[in-house]
Image (tube, rainbow, N blue to C red; front, top):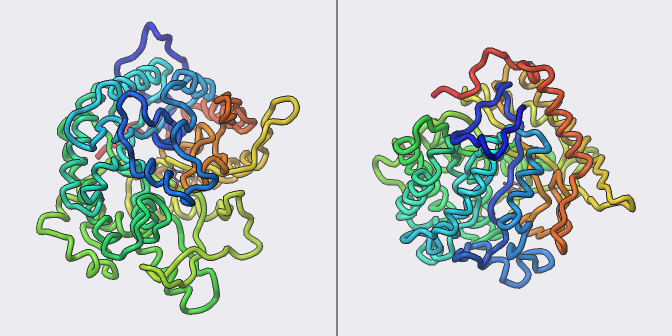
Length: 468
Ligand code: FCB
């Protein structure tokens, strides 16, 4: 793709030539750093990181990849990859340090600069409104457990739409709502560290309501908006051959795969969750939640193997069968499950699918020549993109694929111990080194462009832009 110079910088998102988008994804808390610069407020993750024992090695998001200051260098790395699109999230507590009220102009200006740099590099910005960094000030008012959050979130969405809607048209409301509700409010494993059934069920409903409220605002304010949410859909298999694990796998899947997709797409909760969520529902909520979206955002890494347990949902992660290989973070490597998930989503939701996260952690380190030879990541990405091609050949309407992640970054409770980047980050110096997988991905993209306009097996006449 021809890259634009800074002088002829486009003012709106570029339209990809091939119709299939190759991209990378990141999130604000995991890369930005600058935690106390230019008026940013605390998020629940800043507070969580300060609690002893919560995050490996006591790591925090204080500096992370210092992307706040190095975004230009990072956009140049993306340009070298040749990607079409970059998905990032906006830090709500950076824009609104108290979560609501007065906006923080230096923060607004930061995302202006980032978006303009992306457009100048010919890269389409995809904004995710919420990737887990709730303003602490709102958490202190009840956060996702307070129904008022739908209004606070809609106001925040309006601020983003007003400021960036002239240049950005792709917006996602939430990243992986099932993960941050279950881990943060059900299991107590992630910020804010709550393990309580009512907290979990109220958070689920209020996140759904906030999704609907934000869609209303974005549709009204952004011309040609292309909207969706990002869901982590994964098959849940029983870890053992017993009836308890089989029942646990079903229960787990209701929370993981259905608690958001049912209301958002079918205007109801799955029957097994309805009773627990009913106390938080009001008339009219479902109509607000179940608004049309333009695409299905999928994050997928692996299937789950689930066992019975005594927690709020009586189910937790078990071990995969011994013959299933795993990544360094312990996640099973099963590309066939990715292919099957894509086909299943295609059949159930009949929407264009964008894979907005896929990738792997690995034990990367520069060798004596200063190169990072991450053969394991290349093998993983190769197998998973092949599985995606199989799904497309079998009819799945997949329109894009984004690797998680551009950079090694703050991997939540694993801190900096798990490296997911195509680009190695030497955290003490912040030096970036593109890994062998970055070259591999750049070649894959270039190769798919050479087969233009049929990048993989998609229909070249298909519109690049999803229709509602
Ligand atoms: C996903 C998260 C993302 C990152 C990857 C490895 O579940 O959305 O922030 O942590 O896993």
